[in-house]
Length: 166
Image 1 (cartoon, helix red, strand yellow):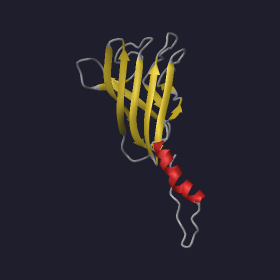
Image 2: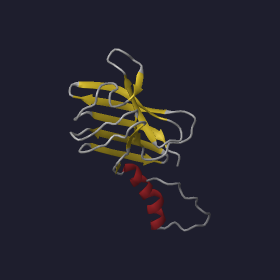
Image 3: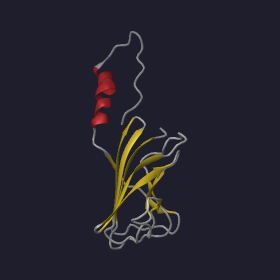
Image 4: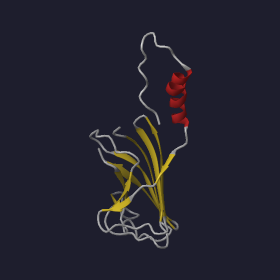
């Protein structure tokens, strides 16, 4: 993880430890592997339950820029709840007065919907939006039945980039 660079003082002795911390460690954090996390899956109504499904997330944070990926695969004991879905982000978004938009894919069998995920200012979650059917370009927030009824094996893939609050 990158951090604010050091302010050097005139006449200061530069040591190997300082060089490692200020240069090597900064570069390594940019080139490091992504960090895994388990996002929380919530809804505006009855809560969904993952059951034997899989929900994983990973991210890379460089300064205040966050690149993230969330994957949900419904299992045979997953229950989908009611209301629009949201997924936890790895860091709170910046309060910049505009929303960030990422990509969202929904797959089930041979059906694939391509949509967007939205991150509002100063929030900790993102919500995927998809066309409500195969003939329209308007979108609605993903639910257990929109754009189609979710079943075991359905997969939600969300990716994006946003500015973190800190």
